[in-house]
Length: 379
Ligand SMILES: *Cc1c(COP(=O)(O)O)cnc(C)c1O
Image 1 (tube, rainbow, N blue to C red):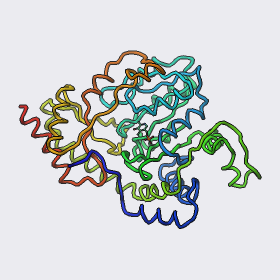
Image 2 (cartoon, rainbow, N blue to C red):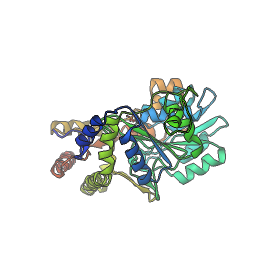
Image 3 (cartoon, rainbow, N blue to C red):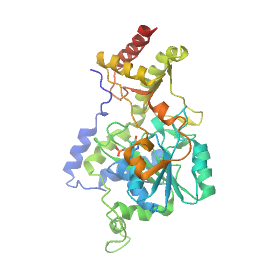
Image 4 (cartoon, protein in one colour):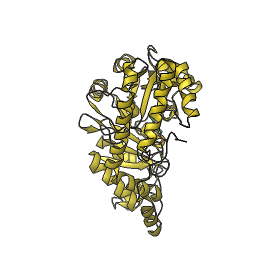
């Protein structure tokens, strides 16, 4: 069986975890957290990286940080994971979903522009499949209207917009280290990137249960106390230790993923030329990270047949994202602004192929051959 995903393991994870255990300090913000945060700050040229338990937690922290509340509207694509919206719904804010562009499945800048009102507090671009949104246009729109930009870069670690790493461009960036993402901190994990220096002090307080404990540990205050609302947004040292092994190996993991992605792309090109499928499109400003290899079929029925065909050949392929604006909670906490020209129809045709660090070249070939066979039979 070729699974859809296996969490990446590069070699040093176990020895780092052992080191963490021997240090007799396993709670958050210990040596491994400091090491991996600083490594990411220098690698990604990020002002401040704060580890969190998940990208979901990062988004929730970001929503508290910008004071999202009942009177606010938050613009985001309908085609995304629930956490993007849930974080702001938790604060009582109204979610304004917009359509995506059909070529990238990233939010449509024109749709965002039309959705902005005096109540708009933030835009949350999602870099789908690690392929960048058009950040210059988005940042210009945000600046003109005095709106926050919070990048959901869950899928975008190591990918770039022009020369900047994703997650470092908006005022705030959110990463995921869940086991299905390119790098993991042992199953669950995330990070919050604070790019607007003004936000840092309060972000640290919210992350430390609403206290100024981080300042206390740095010796900036002589006691710590309750300052603000907050929660526990620190991962353990075990998670940080796992993540350090992954980030130290980031180039290696990235190259391996990109080579698998390229192998799929080259081999499936004839199917695109024959009009059977649509391959991913990478805009010139985007350097992607091979987070995902997805194809678009000509219809939902063909997708179902292809999934069944692959399954019979012991290959797992999956699709995702029922558009949030048509989900029960999406209807309750939000609304679609403008037309749904692409979101629903494209989401029904999209299929993701196995792509993970330890996937072997011959396994990729099996997936490719299985897909080629499917279309040969249908010709
Ligand atoms: C995976 C993902 C999340 C959630 O990440 P967790 O670390 O599992 O909380 C949020 N947004 C997007 C776009 C994702 O792909």
